[in-house]
Image 1: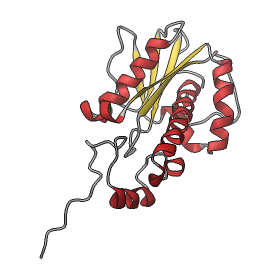
Image 2: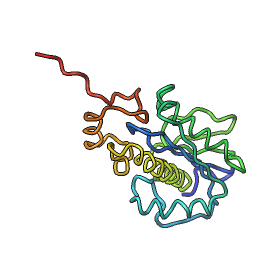
Image 3: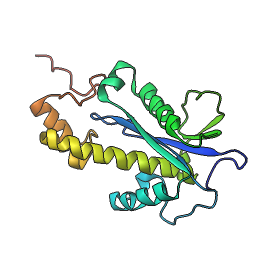
Image 4: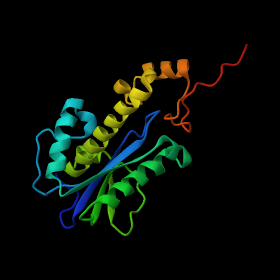
Length: 196
């Protein structure tokens, strides 16, 4: 299905990078035409990087409106990851023209946006095209951002792990420590081993 309800102009919202150790969290809001269809469109996590990169410009071209926003690692640390992710969604909704009259959000947590009605949907990115489209735009925008950060901090291999806590990323943190782009509020560094 393209959207949760059929009466109001609806934006799908999703975020990317919420569980990462480093880099910003991104979110997108997308209003799709009711007749939009693409056979590959799905939850971004179910797609390959190549498929996401193929779909992103198709979504942007077809959308009635779309927008992407981000919150930095420092902003995440200043509030918390949930608040930062939802603020990202709000910032992306702010940019839409025309404005959404209803919001469909992936997941189970959202703060009311102005007076616009909303619905949270667990695994909504696998059920509704507009949420899937938002998940793809958020993910591709974040991946490109992490590629740029990789040039500045190549030791963490963000071109491959995109800031997620992979074994290679954790090994690099153990060797080089944390950098400015790491989320200090996350329990990333292992506690010091006590001496026996």
